Structure formats: C-alpha cells, structure tokens
Image 1 (cartoon, rainbow over the protein chains, first blue to last red):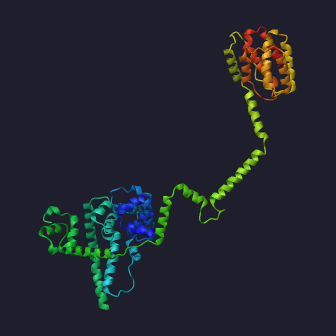
Image 2 (image 1 turned 90 degrees about the horizontal axis):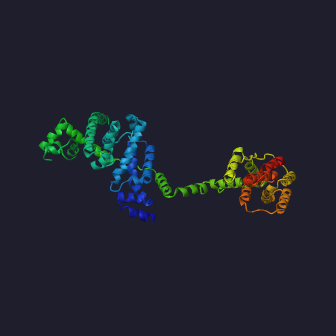
Image 3 (image 1 turned 135 degrees about the vertical axis):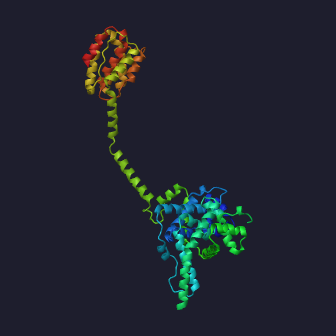
Amino acid sequence: MASKKLATYQTHSDEQLMKLVQEKDAYAFESLYDRYSALMYTYFHRMLWKDKEKARDFTQELFSKLFEKSNYFQEGRNFKTWFYSVAHNMCKNEYAKHEVRVDAHAEIKYQTVDRTPESSSETLDKKSFKAKLEEVLQSLDEVKRTTFELRFYQDMSIQEISESMECSEGTVKSRLFYTIKELNSKLKDFEHILKAILIMISFYS
Amino acid sequence: MKSNNKYDPEDIESLLLHKQFHELYPEEKEFVLRHLENEEEYNSMRNTLFEIKEISSASDLLRPDAGLKKELLRAFQGERKSPFIIWLNALFAAPDRSFFGQRGVQLSFSLAVIAIIGVFLFTSQPNKKVMAENHVEQNKEMESPAEVETKQADVEEEGITEESTAPVLPPAAVQINSADAAEEVNDVVMKEEAAPEAQPLTNQVSKAMADEVSTTSPQVSDFAVENANSENIDYASPAITNKATALSPTFNSSGAELYSEYTTVAIVETSSNIEGYADVVDLLFTAK
C-alpha cells in the first residue's frame, strides 16, 4: 500500500508534493526526501568544508524545516529554487557564525586524493587536477563558490541560481565568468607543474 | 549573435562552451577580446571549463545514512499528532519504561497520596471549623465605635428628633454566662416597671429578644418569653422588631449583651413618643 502510494507520487511535480506536505502527507514528504536528500547532503558536504557530520546535521535541519515551516512555501514558486535558497541561507548563517575559512591545505588532505601509486599518468592527472580545483574553490569567496557550486555541481540553470540566490541572471553570469577566469589563472600554474611531474614520471618509469 | 549589443561579459561562458576561437564571428571575437587578453587565454579558459564540467559531472552524489530518513519520518509523524496526544504519550506510554516507571502513573500515585493525607488531616480535627466560625462571629459582634456611630445615624434617620441626645452604648466587650444574663435581664425588667411609659416598648423588645436568644441561652430565653407573653404586645411598630432582628447576633454566651444592646436601640427609636425615656436609659445603664 505504502509503496504503491509512493510510486504514484513519483509522477507528481515537486510543487504538487510540497502542497501535499503542507497537508501533512507523509508519503509526499518521503518522496521529496528521496528526490533531494542526496543532492542536499552533497551540497552541504561541499559547502561546509567536507564535514560529513555537519552535512548530515544540516540536511536533517533542512528537511525538518520542510515540514515545520511548509507554510512559508508560496504557491506558484519553484520548489527547487526555494529549497536551495533555504539551504544557501543556512550555509551563510554557518559562515557568519564561524567566520573562519578552512585552510585549503587541510581540506585537501581530507579529500579523496588517492595517495597510492597511480597506474597511469592520466588518472594521476585527473585526480590531481580535481584536488587542485577543490583547493582553489575553497579559496574563493563564499558568493563565487556558491554560484559555481550550484552551476556545475548541482547542475542548476542560470535562472534557478538567480532565484535561489535572489539576484539577477546577469549577476549570476558575471559571477560565473569571473570565477572561471580566476580558476583558470590559478590552475594554469598548476598545469605547468603537473606537466613537469608527468614528464618526470614517464622518464623514470 | 550578430550584434555587439547582444553580448555581455557573462555570455562568454556560452561562447567558450560552444565555439573555438577560430569559429567565432568577427564581432564575437571583438567582444571576447574586450574581456580576455588573447586567443591563448580564450583557449585556456575553454579547456578549464571543459575540465570542470567533466569533473563535476563525474562526481558522485553522496547519500546520507538510512537512519536520517527514519529520524525525519518519525519527526514528521510526531508533527502530525496533536501536542496533547504527544504530551499524554510522554506521560503514559513511554516505550522504554515499565508501568510503574511511567511518569503519569507516578504522578497519579503522588496526587492520590497527597489527597488521602489531606482528607485525613481535615477530618481528624472537626472542631477547628466551628471554632473558626465562632471567632468570625465574635469579631462581627465586637463593632468598632465608628460602626456604632453609623448605626446611630441610621436610627436617627428613622425617627429620632434632632434634640434627642440618646447616649450611644459602646459595644459590649465582656462576655458573661447565661445565668448572669438572666439575672441582669430580670433586674432591668423590674426597673422598667417603675417607668410605665416604657412598658410597651419593653414588651416588644422582650419579644424580639425571646426569639433571638431562645436558641442560645435557655435561661435568658425562658425569662424573655415569659416576660413578653405576660403583656399585650404591640406589633404596630414592626420597625423596632425588624431592627432588633436584623442586628441580632447569634453568639451563645452573650445574652445579656444582646439584651442591653437591643433594648437600647429599641428605646432610641421610640424615644420621641415615650416620656421618661431618660429614666429608662438610666435604668439600662445601671443594669449594664
């Protein structure tokens, strides 16, 4: 019975489900959780210094707000952008609370950089680039990082980002452009070093 | 993308994603080169953007543990229930407690014990309540001089002439027993006989007193009834009787006080029609 109802809800839009959540429908809430829990958990994990415990707590708090303050969701609004704006505000509060920026080098150690010898230089190249990218992203200011995160990791459109961050689409595009430019300049140096390392590896192997 | 006006710095992203530098239209190149240094930077940015896209799309989604979903669903169910039911459940249906460990059960037992002790203490001292009532009545009876003055003013409004200088008796503060009260009443009545004009009044007062005192002081009561019945009672002056009745206290052991007070009040009210009033008052004071 429950699974049947859940299956029925799979065809519902987010907004329809949210309306049912406002009517205290547990299956609708479960459906929304299934759709967004991984996305939001990943988002918090990335935005909150790769802290899994913090990401879990924030995900829990976010979904608690979903049913506790469901009346704040206004009919006609896009659920996804509303939900992300709530999450974004939670992150901003967290930043303001701590007012510390995690040391990017410390974060790199926490990331999934494989320290075991690589079998191929291509894998090393990509993993190293990814690690460097994460490092550089952590060094960006909060607004740029959030915009970049929503655009490339949460796969949101410019319009959705503008609604979530409550700014114009032009502002979002501009932020993205300057973020990519900054990343490019910082990663360019890394590419040169990386190429040298790869040449050395291939020479000794 | 034919016009320069169409381009904004933020649109470079789409150009980077879709076109190489040599594929750009002249106006697009012009626009790009306003924001980027040269072709090399354009191509470098393009490569970086593709790398980022590739990495971000390949990055796996992290999933929270299954316990989180259960916790949230439980919280959601709790939100649906009314606070009163939740409160009751917390009192009587805590899952991790035995029956006698439930807070509600413990609270009920505590209240029952307190109630039993309270009832026991209350019923074991029955005289306390009566004593308390007597105390209150006594306090009522012991009127202050101000109250006496008020009372006098009321009496004056009902018929006393302004020339009347009837003395106001202070409230009786000394309690005497029934035997003394009977004796005193007797003396007063004997003295009243010396003032024939006051006889009807005395009879009326005696009647009122007989009714009033009958329940409290047998000796006084007997005398008063006898005295009252021995004469013709004039009920044409019900104001006197009513006044005496309204002011009648019921305190057991002060029959004499009652008598003196009521007699005084009654006499004061009828003083304008009775000659020898002063004599009667003197007699009363003497008796008192």
